[in-house]
Amino acid sequence: MSDVSVLRLESVRKTFGGSVVLRDVDLEVAPHTVTALIGASGSGKSTLLRCANLLEEIDDGAIWLDGEEITDPDADQDAVRRRIGVVFQAYNLFPHMTVLDNVTLAPRRVHGVPRAEAEERARELLERLGLAEKADAYPDRLSGGQQQRAAIVRALAVRPRLLLLDEITAALDPELVGEVLDVVRGLKDEGMTMVLATHEMGFARDVADQVCFLDGGVVLERGTAEQVFADPRRERTRRFLRRVVDAGRL
Amino acid sequence: MTVTKGEAAPEGADDEGDMPDGAGADDDGYVPSERRLERERRTRARARRATAVAALSTLVTAVVLYLVVVSAPGWPRTKETFFSAAYARETLPKVFEGLWLNLRLLLVCGAAVLVLGMLIAIARTLRGPVFFPLRVLAAAYTDFFRGLPLIINLMIVVLGVPALRLQGVTVDPVLLGGTALTLTYSAYVAEVFRAGIESVHPSQRAAARSLGLTNRQALRYVVLPQAVRRQVPPLLNDLVSLQKDTGLVSIGGAVDAVRAADIIVGRSLNYTPYIVAGLVFVALTIPMTRFTDWVTARMDRRRAQGGAL
Image (tube, rainbow over the protein chains, first blue to last red):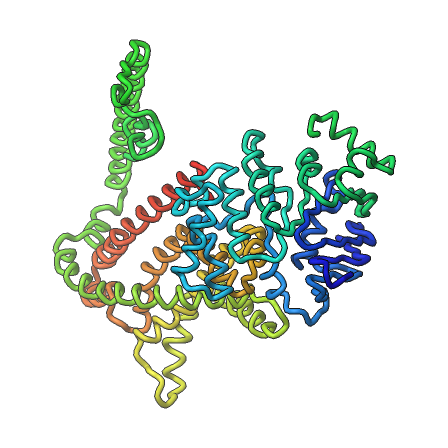
């Protein structure tokens, strides 16, 4: 079973200065599926994603990518990150580069793709996400939604095996959320494997094959979107979802 | 009369910002209202009043200063020994000749300082156990040379190195003086670069690493370009300092602008040449300082417009 999962976490534990952020977390992500991590702020969603990309070192447990243990101290971390795309809440575009240079940096410098080829593919991707005219603009000339779409293109440009999306709509104005979520839906249709931390419950319900509810660093409940949202087993999950509904997010 | 600068904002606003242009410049057939015209008239009147006040206060201050200096008991004698027109005329060509050396020193040392400062700054930010000695060395270097007075550094290098009588090592005071300047200023500039590197938000490095860039690639393509851009104003500031400190190589006997003045002073016992040389240095640094201000203001404006730079 383990060799078919794209990503697998087993008993992962992570602490920050004594406070436990992830406790005994197991997770399995099958190819071409979307996993949504939901839960209150501080429940460990973002930390889980950062651990999966080795931006944070875990205290205990293990993580596999395509059946290869990436938490092995001898694993080539740069090589692991090359296979995982990340989109951040705050976009994190490089402000001193045009959108096109942002997108082609990794293909050119990391994967050795010749400039012309990298730019051609970048323009193609930008076109598909409706950013063709913004290729030569600097990030500060783009709206939040455009910046986030550019960041998605940047992550896709290296043809990642797995895409991690960390609350990618949390910093956006409400009217710009839709355009970014549409992009994610499109990626799901193309079969991209994704793990996303999100507060957009309607979206999670709609797009996710698997939903994990995190609470205090523990995966309290997991199942299909239908099961977790329509028939939560745990009282805490129910309470969380009720709060979300009250806030008008579902 | 820099006082008027702030008050003259209505005229100064047409730089390039997004401020409304003058009345009638819009392309939608807009006709300025009576209210706007009246408001602009009053703003202009206030600016004129401010200019007049500034001019008057400057004039009064100048007159008072002049009277205080001239009425000092030692003034006639001071005027003769420090402000002699005849000696000034004799000195100026010599000082300019010497200044050429200062300018060359500035150019060569400036370039060397940028390279060395950058290398030291990078050495200080390197991670990993292999680089431990390099890190320590770089830190010790900056600590030492930032603390050591430049004049002592110059004397040790310019006077001490020739005393060693080493084979194949130059005794040229210009080269040695330039070396001393480079040693001290590299320490300053390394700190400027290091501050720049540390000012780049960690999320930028995280984004670079998540794309698979190695630590070194992240530094080169993402962190350093942003760090250097941000540190342009403080770097120019250090360049202005270096420009005037090139005058200190004269202590080794190199004939720069200061030494040229010194020679005439020694012969005539009139101090006017010092004043001349001093004013020449001031005249040289003013354009640099203004340029620095301009660059800083431009960057501030861009940041204010929402550019992260």
